[in-house]
Length: 147
Image 1 (cartoon, rainbow, N blue to C red):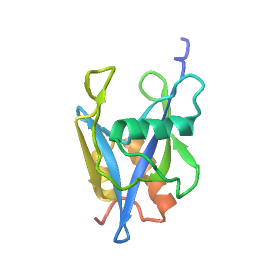
Image 2 (image 1 turned 30 degrees about the horizontal axis):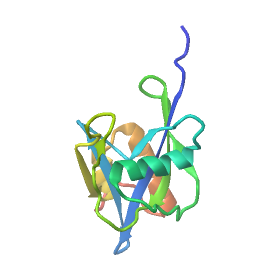
Image 3 (image 1 turned 30 degrees about the vertical axis):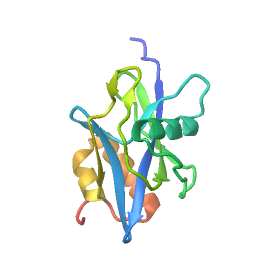
Image 4 (image 1 turned 90 degrees about the vertical axis):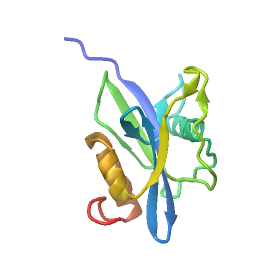
């Protein structure tokens, strides 16, 4: 059996800190919640792709890599996809779910700013690991328990 080729995607874990509490931006497509992300264009660096996709999918621009350029990658999933995520402070402004030119409709059905606890309940196991990494970078306790 031959191994599937790897598809690379990159995204941002958008966070806003208010009153010493982190709020994360999640996007929903059908029943699946995720952080903004998408596939790398040919020759595109992962961080550039992550920032581009976050802006395309949320209408926000000017994400700040306040915690550096460290990242976490998921294990292979689906048909050989690996997603890389960077933690970034989301800029002020309203989230928009713009119409995707490829789809003719917004790529996502809903967005929510959520606490770590809420995110932990909405995300699947692969993304809960990403959330736990982000919380560690933020110096927060795990998503379970308060919020």
